[in-house]
Length: 616
Image (tube, rainbow, N blue to C red; front, side, top):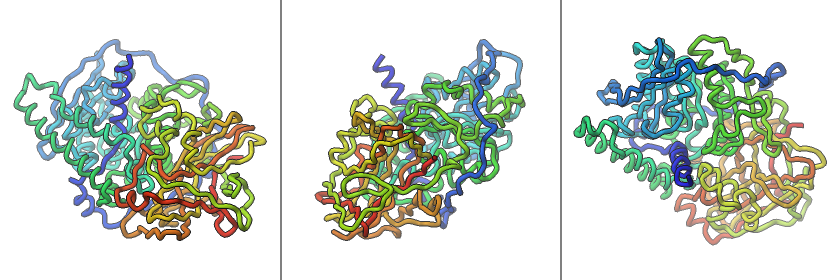
């Protein structure tokens, strides 16, 4: 049983990471001469007074008791590369609408997202295709590269034209299979009517690969081993076509081993991949979302790998007038959808059925009655409907770090004490971050549920116990005045909920290397005049020198959350020198920051603070 659970967890973890590909960097640079515009939208002023989840969940009985599977169907792309698909067709009178899943994780892997029997037995063909260079398909894998993106359009139009298809196609799947839905939809393929991305990324650099200018090492080694192992499995048609299978395996070798290794080496060594640029923009759905015009149902997690980006994608689509919905659960990347249905919120399968029935079967499922935004409330334990994202009723409130380690709305006085901490790269193991950034795989470590051990090597600032429930919803910014004896400083800033028994539960966090402290205000988000989501360029040109013992103001982006600090609980800001195993600084920064002592200042001249989106 343990091995089966571990294997399933590793498969899910495999679906979690996007790595920049050197093969398409030049092509991307040729098409991208400047940084994409990323100014955040203003908070929504619309309300959803008429929207709520009613207690009657949409569902239908199975129409078809069985289905037929066509294995390894060949689909030839424009350049002659053959992709292989498994096609699951209900046994009954067609034609049927089609659900398309584009996977790099080998369509033979027995997971629901490659063959969703719930949807198939309710009258949908499910087509699962190995993207080029993976599984049974020919070519070289180039994660989200231009060729793979162009394949998406051809695959939709191919599926729409088949005799078992009614000409209407929906896209479906999690993680990688949710991300590539945006690239496909942005090309407006004929027949595409709706998408259902589960835990998709928005900004490759900031969301996951180099958050805060630091290399995400939480799961890259495991991911590399798994993608290589699955990519090099013999295709299911090996015995029928051994020469073709050998050719495919040989073509996969470079893609599943060479480019991930070179990308990771470049990032860790401080090479080109340690900086934001065209290769990352091309693989970031956020920069292409303004070309998507089909309805999108986005689900994400408050502890998911893409916690930052999922609401940004919803916000961008909604601002353009596209029909979009957002559901944020309490999930990591490995347990998305768990616990549903609850609080009148349906399961993901039920929501997908309602979504696709509306747009692919022309059944009036009253999509307009689905709340636009539904979020789980950490600390409260229930889902709630909220007016837009960010929350339309959120107000920016500043809490100051005080010399006595408290957190108050009153600004510090002259001469309040500073705090010091040793700079070391392995802080953070006993924190929620360890569970989150290994896609839930290390949640079995007991101390990841209580940050008190990690806080022994951090500097903490805590409010008095709340006299009433205290709600925060949206992105958070920490403005920290700090100095170091070294030539680099990394700050990890955590927001935690401290219970009366002293346990400290991490709600969310953010990270920043001081050399990347430059902020572009034109791309940042402001609320009531306060910067609540600072935007850092993360380019070589924008880097700033860290001078020993020189005071710096570091504006740390803390990923958005939705939480309630209950009466009697306290809110804590914990500042540490690293977030291991989640992140490691690129080698030049790591060496510059070793054996340093950091000082966090909190006096009248250096009013360190955190800006919270408070919902009264």
